[in-house]
Length: 148
Image 1 (cartoon, rainbow, N blue to C red):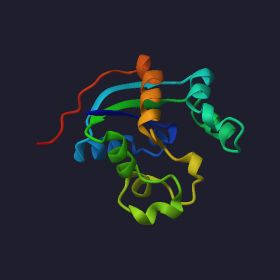
Image 2: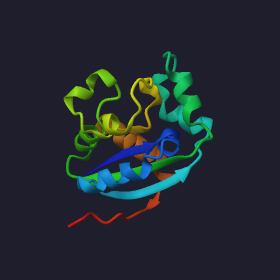
Image 3: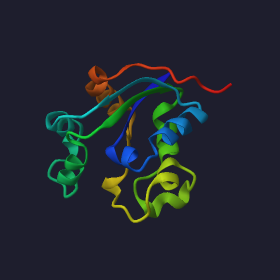
């Protein structure tokens, strides 16, 4: 069993797609085992996006989530990192043709800059471990039953 981390950014709530995203994860048997709503501090988001510091998109991605409602999710399933990556899809609109039914192409407004997407997912097993440990204090056990 593998664990991965996802968080729904403020746009998931303002665009009204957050429940549809949770339902999609459920439908593809990616169980959410812990979750938590929070308004992350600048310190927490700086730790999360540490590898992006100094890049052009760092300030915009920080401004996007600091002090705004997000939903942190822990998912446990076989090959969770790979499966969640596939189901979420690429952040670049130009790559959506490879999986047009993924979450991002299905729910994201076309033409929105990639950093303005509404969902984050761990991009490797190492990142999943690091992110899950970082966000663990903000999540509580959660069960959204998987359809039989």
